[in-house]
Image: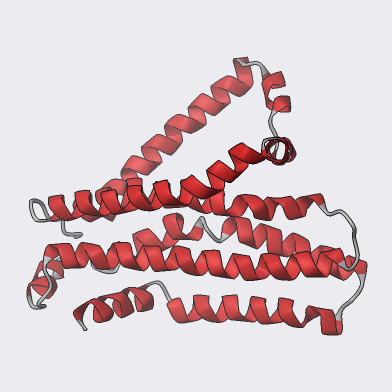
Length: 245
């Protein structure tokens, strides 16, 4: 019951009902589209929207949900609130990791439904649709986002949102200067060798490597996510995040 309460609290903190309603509306609109729109232009427009949302949706977890669930608990009364509940520090950390894990599972399920719809809708109009290959990369994309969460969550749990945001801003500023420096003085022809289409082609030409990536990447990502939880749980009893003013 305690874990369920913590998960529901995080669900409310991230405005979960609004997010769930939005995803449901988009899914229903896609599922009913063949009934009210069979034109090539309409299907192409819907396919482009689905691809964009499917690529942005996984990023919502590390960029929004993670910080939102920790921000909701920050403040001067945090220790008093936690101390009044029968919740051990490891249980508190476990609830955060479980919530993030469930969020990734929901994203995977929703994008799988959208991908199935798009494949069936597009195949009725086009024999070949190269952007459809992007959906084959979404599981690997989700694994990369899960690894990002595994790296970030221990710092959020121990240092707090303010410190982590300051660190991320410093890293992004450094990356910005490095990118600008390369654009000014580097060899820009190198960028012509890399593209999403080239990556898809490479995966098609190396089916064995693609199968290995699709098989072992989720396992490795989940194991590292669990290891991240163990580290955060072990450190959470030694130091509390700083209270926000």
